[in-house]
Image (cartoon, rainbow, N blue to C red; front, top):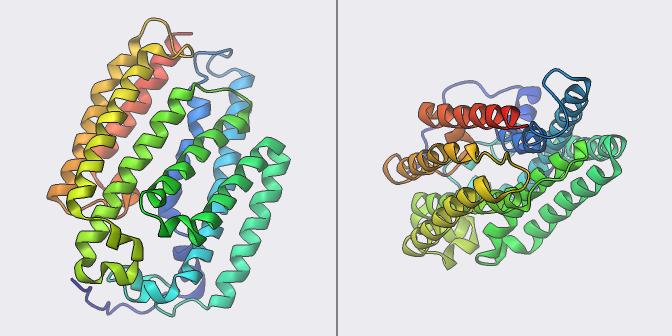
Length: 308
């Protein structure tokens, strides 16, 4: 269903630029704090100098990844300008709506990428390698992966894994491979739900906006979502009592119900509230889901802190 035109005056160029940088999607980059969170039971105590060093590095990594991802968003919007104009929601983006000049968007994108990559090198050369890997993945996704069935969603999911890797590299710690596995599966879950939403929302016009949608069907996506959701829950459950980096008291298993409820709640929103097209919007707007994420983070931090 097409959106009704807004009667509000168009935003100014600065506001239009900020919207195009998609600050709401910066919530994805909170994964960069995973490395900091999962060192709570290692070598430092709360409020120690090491904690502040780790927290400062993780925060800087978060800011740099936000700049990097915003630069990528601007470049993607420039490339998909005509397709976005045919989309019922994306046509309202500043570039597609004519509220932001393409030349300005391109210049800002290049500056953001330059600042992000130079800052990444100053933080840690290894973090720069992760940033370059993320940028290369986005280019590969835009040119190839987005046109290949299944690989398109895998490409998106690997971007989340690189965020988790970047968070660990930024503070110089190792994280259990289980965390990367769970991150990959959870990102696949969100990506498949997004494809399902796009397919149902665009209906007959789905292929015109995104050609790869012609390769999917709601039934196929529902089966894939069910498989990945089950695998995510199983992988997280195994992680909580097999990872050598977690406390040996296995208290992390107490967070499994929170993960279960979070995934069930998300599936409820996808199937009953027609959500899922924008995971970051769902995570920022749904009260029960926000409460679940905060409860999980608090519980995990407490369990790791007392299990040192």
